[in-house]
Image 1: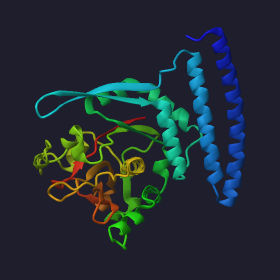
Image 2: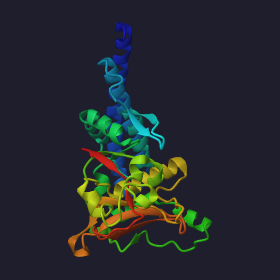
Image 3: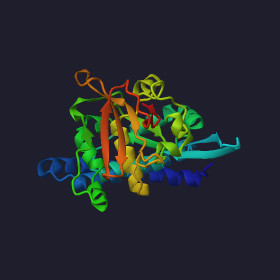
Image 4: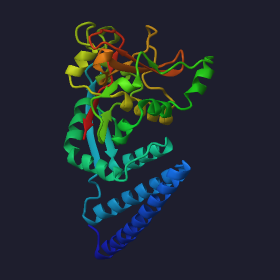
Amino acid sequence: MESPEEKGELLQQLETGVEKIEAGRKALEAELEIAKKSGDFSKFYELQKIAQKGIFEAEKTKRKLEGEASAFDISADYVTKDAKGKEKTETITFNFETELVSWTDFYAKHKLTLPANFAEKMQDIWERNGEALRKEIVEKGFDRVIFIPASVDTADLKKLEESMTEGYKEEAKKVGKDTVYDTYWGVETKEVINSRTGDRIILIHSSPDLTAQPELLKTLDKKYGGEKTTRTDNKAEDFIKAGEKLTIAEWLILQREIWEKTGVHLDGKKGEDGYVKPTWCPGSRLGKEAGSYVVHAYWNPDYAQVFVIAYSPGNAIVSIGCRLSRCFE
């Protein structure tokens, strides 16, 4: 509990913060008009990042005044058992402000425009779904969150892919590949229909491949240590029926974020059988004219690039599993 003097200081900080936010808003609006004419949005993105951080600080001060300083922390224990039945407990913690700053920086870096009220929308989703977020962490061990604005889904999917794979051509050169193939094989990006497109927070696993996390391993065929049986329950339509809705846009964002933080490409590790284990993206399908095929994605280490392919939802492919996710809107 803050003393009267401390509350006075916090109130002064809040008033100063609000003044800065208003000044920042005006500067942002002016710079947007300049950017529209010049085509150079670099300064706009920088001002946008500064404005968002100002809002974060004001919100933090406001919560301290209201005695809610820790309201934005979500923490839960995920318990697993090893082969001998010994329990292992992992405490997974997310801080809203940390995630918000991280994702705001991420989108600014990749020149993806955020709505002016991005912070407020994410905060609303976070506050309304706190207990549900904890429940899913306990049950599935999700250890990564993605903050996604609706604007990502209204953007051109091809442009998003180009942004999320920028610089990968250098990777191809390292493995002696001078030719970089199209990411999409048999997939017209304009035909992709996503099951979720609004402002949302996604819970997902950061494990680099499906074999590295118990819940993800379960989605693979028994020959890989999973719980599925080819042609019985590991088809795309089986994961769709189970409620899985990961979209290709979400996967592209996740794979880029993980690569930038770790240098590891998502879903690109070869197993002892020599095959990579791709993930279905059950939330991304092609239109009826294209057979309603379901998208799957992976990193191909031989070609050093991302590949996105679509198959019939009834196809059974032993090496494909599913990167689980949960969506909160």
